[in-house]
Image: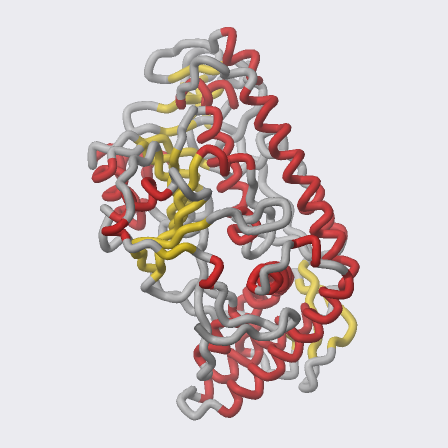
Length: 470
């Protein structure tokens, strides 16, 4: 094992924090459900469907972007898998609390425009209320070479808070870490939410709306919860340098997570994440990015076009890093700790309405969630009365107590008062202007400019290295 770098430095690996257990040596267990935050079309679900069929687990699909619940449910239903699919294009704060950490990001222009954390938290909520004990989060771009490894992951949950599958495909790293590896540096990966098994005691943690949300999920109040690594998963290829917006949006979450895990690497707990720690770590992070830029520029194996895109992405990260202060890091962690308590209270409140008779369809109806299931839809009447289109049955007393007024859904048919099918209305999100930095050749940030054109954001990777960088 290599010697540890200083605590304020970027660490290339955190593997020493994990318990590595070969799948053949792990006890076998059973998963209740596989939860997929689905953003791609139905054909991409073949690996998740196969895993659900081979393990006998319920498949819960949380669909948005290019995924549609109706087609996703049909795909799984044809394979004989028990499936519930939910279209998530309208967010209701009633379902997932309004976290203080998210508000802090919005107030300081660090907000992310993805729904990954929301979908994972909704999956946690449904798993808890449905009475599931062991579930797997599986991304729709992950293949499982040996689905039997899931039984090993499930078995390890008897002694671990979480068990991740080792990624043998495209490394799951930030853009900065990809660039470090691709230019010759030694860079490892860690457990990620793309293939992560967790048990009921872990449902009390949540995924904050920030990059590396899975690293935060694995943490307890001041330490890493016991986490295992077993089996294999295969991450599909993607281009981390396609545009610089990705690097820009990752920088805060990558900085916070790496700064916390560097403390854990040294056997220190998270109470050591003081302003002084962040002052030193932020300086070290900027130095790491600058060194990586120089390493990329000097790497002989990189072609000129790829090198240029990598440098633009790294300068985007560096520009973002200049906006992160030690005080903000401390404030974010305080908000995250408060949100952990808020999440547990939220679960306890909803759990009281389903005590004694947990059932997936009852939970979905009670939450007002329209869910496709292949042979029908669990839908919400516009009048507020919830029905299952397979049986047209209203809420029972316990379901009503849980709160039938909560609802979300898109593209799944509802049932009007006259019994006719009616589309569930969709609220189109407002497009907000994005904020970007001009970063010079020396990596120093200049005043902010506004970029509202999404098409322009997609072309930023073509800009010169010293031009506009998101």
